[in-house]
Structure formats: structure tokens, C-alpha cells
Amino acid sequence: MLQAAGHEAVVVLDGGLQKRVRENRPVETGEITPVPAEIAAVPRDGMWADKQDIMDMLGETDRATLIAAAPYLPEDISEIPAGAVRVMSRVIPGSVSVPYPAMAQPGSTALQPTEQREHLLAAVPKGAPAIVYCASGLSAPLIGLSLVSAGHKEVKIYDGSLDEWLSDARNPTESRVRPS
Image (cartoon, rainbow, N blue to C red; front, side, top):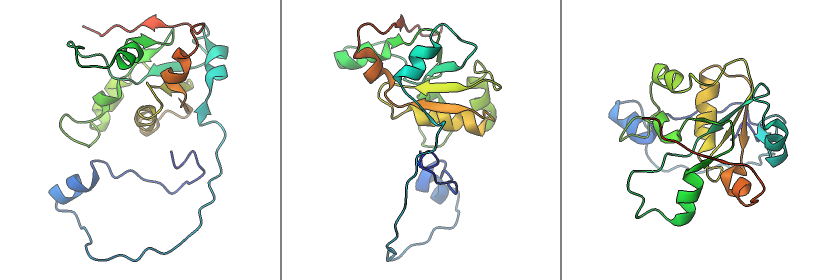
């Protein structure tokens, strides 16, 4: 996300502070006095997709791979809000499902090892552009990050995601099927 705003010197603290402490890595403590600074965010072209981009590529799977990053519906949906069920059960036609929870190690905030992430992303061709979407635009960047770290060069995030897509009943959708 910060790179999309024009910042190049960005890294991810994979697993967060908890993982760093568990691994006995250096951590500084004490009072910190922030230094005021101005940051000029300049959006970079080519990192975001919009609804029109998706409409333009429907039926043309050679243009880009659409990736649905929302989690699969659980077996018991009795406590899931109806709106969430609707979003999690639909995809844009031609999408490949790569649910974002699969990218994290179970019970952890750390990403899966590189080999596991590459296995999960195997259905996404490396030489073609990829457009990632989720339910609301919040989870898609994790899959985008995983794609970039696996060597994909052209990755865009459709930040309108299914919230925007499903708001227009004329937009095509398909039922999302959980693999067996």
C-alpha cells in the first residue's frame, strides 16, 4: 500500500513484534520523541484497478488473471451476516480463488514460508498481469504482497472489490465453490 502511494523504501515486519520477540531479535524500549515530518503521497500508476478495468477484461482471460482473495464460507454460516454470506459466496467470472487466510501460518500473524505461498499461487501465471480483489479491498493487498514476493511483476489491487462489484446487479458473478 505504501509503495502504491509512491514510497519505495518499504518492508513488512512479517509476524509482527510478537514474532520478533519470540525469536529473541533486538527490540528497543523506552520513550521515543517523534520527529515531525511531511510526507507527500504520490499515487503510482499501474498498481490499482477499477471497475472499468475489470469490465474491459471479462471474457479475455489472456489479459490478466483475476484473483478472489476473500475467505471461503465456513461450513456453518448461521452466525455470518447475510451480506457477508452474499459476498463470500460470489466471484467475478473467470477468477482464481486464493483466499487470504491461506497465506498466514495457522494461529500466527506470520506469512507462510515462501515455498508454501508459491504453491498456493501456482494457478496464477507469473508472466501475466494479475488483479486481486476481496470482499471490501482490505485483504487483497496481502495476496498482492505474496504475488510480488513470489516474483510476479504486474500486480494490481481492485480496491472497490466485491462491495462495489455486487452493488450493480448487472455485473456478472459466479458461485464460488470451495475445493474438496
